[in-house]
Image (cartoon, rainbow, N blue to C red; front, side, top):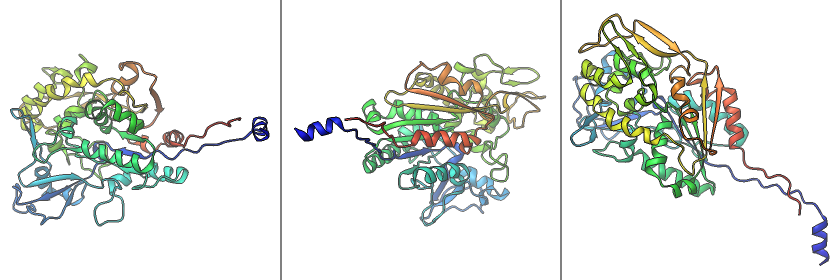
Amino acid sequence: MKLLLFCLTCVYAVERHAGRHPLIIVPGLTGSPLEVEENDAAMPHSWCKRTTSGEWMQVWVSPVQALPLEIDCLTARLSLTYDAKTDEYSNLPGVRLRPLGWRNGTASGKSHKDLLFSYQFDKILNRLHEELGYALGENVFVAPYDWRLAGDSHAKPTNGVGGFYEELKKLIEDAVQASGERAVVLSHSLGCPTMLYFFHKYVTEDWRADHIHGWVALSGPWMGGIVQVSAYLGGWNLGLPSWLVPHDYVKRVQVNASSGVMIAPHPKAYGDKTLVVTPSRNYTASDVPEMLRQIGPQAGGNQTASLFPKLQGPWVELQHPPKNVPMQNWYSTGIKTAEVFEFDSDIVEGFNKAADRTVFGEGDGLVNLLSLQQVENVWPQSSSVTTRTFPNCSHFGILSDARVLTALVDYLKPIRDAEVFI
C-alpha cells in the first residue's frame, strides 16, 4: 500500500525509443542498373559478345556499352518484345536481364556501390547514416528493377521477363521480420507509379497494414510527362548528364518499353492540350498512339501503340491513395519543363529528330506540374496523404536537396513519447 501511494505521488519521466523502420528505396528509371547473361544470343554484329559463359555483364549504365560500335549490341540486349495476341513480353532469344545491386547496391564480387546508386542516393544514404544510424544492406535496402517494364509485367512474369513485385514483397517481409518494425518505402520518379500499382494490385489491405509504416513518394509522374513524347520523336537522355548517358543512348530501347507508356502523358489529365505542333497537324495525348504508328518501328510502331489501351486505360482506376499506406507526396517546382514540341516538318514514317523549338512551362524539369499535382488536385482527398513542395529544385535535385534530406530525417526519426506521469 505504501509503495502504491509512493508511485501515485511520484512523477516518472518515461521515454520510449522505438526501433528504426527499415527503409526500402525503389529507384526511378535512371536509378536501376541492369546486367545481362547471354547464351548464344542473336546479336546484330559479329563483334557483339554472344555468350557470357555463365557470368553477368553490366549493360546499364556501362561506358563501354555507349561506344559507337557497341550501341547496336546494347540495343539488342535491352530489346523488349510485346505480343498483343498472347499478352506476353520477351527478351531477345538467349538473353536474360536482371537488376544489379539488389538490397545493398553492390554488384556481386564488388565492394562499392554501383555508379547509379552513388550518383542518385549517396546524399540520402550518408545523411541517414550520420543522423539516424541507417546502414545500407542492414536496415536500408535498394530494390532496383527492370525499368523497361510496367506494373503488369512486374506482377506477372512471362518468358523470364518481370517478377519484381514478388521479390519486393519478400524483401519488405524479411526487413519487417528482422527489425520488428513496419517498413517505409521511398520511391523516386518511375518508382512512384511502380509502387502505386504494387500497393493497389499486388498486395492486400491487410498485408499493407502489417508491413507498411509509410510511403515517401518523390517526384511522381502520376499521369505521365510530356518529355516522354520527345523519346518517341527524337531521343531523350532521361535528364542525366551527357557524360553519363549520351543523348540517344537508350532511345531505341525506351520506345519499345512498356514503362514508357506508363510515363507518357495521359489523355485523362492532359485532355486536349497540344503537345506536338507540325506544319499540317497538332497532336494531343490521345493522338500519341496514332503518331507512333505513323512513324513506325523508329518510335515503337504498332507494338508500342498496342500497349496504350492496355496500360493507360486502367491506370485511371488506380489514381487514389492505397488504403493502409500513409503517404508522403513530395515534389519540386520552379524548373522550366517542356510542354510543347514544335517541328518545321511533318511527322512521317521513320521520323527521328529533335524539336526545332520547345515551349516550356512549370514543373521539375522532367515532370509537368499538372502531373505532379494529381495527388492533391485530382485524387480523392485523404487524411492519410500529406503533400509537400520544394520550390526551385529539379527532378533529380530533390534527391540531394538539403530541405528534403531534413524532412526525410524528421520523418524517419524514432518515435519519442512525451513524458508520462504515473
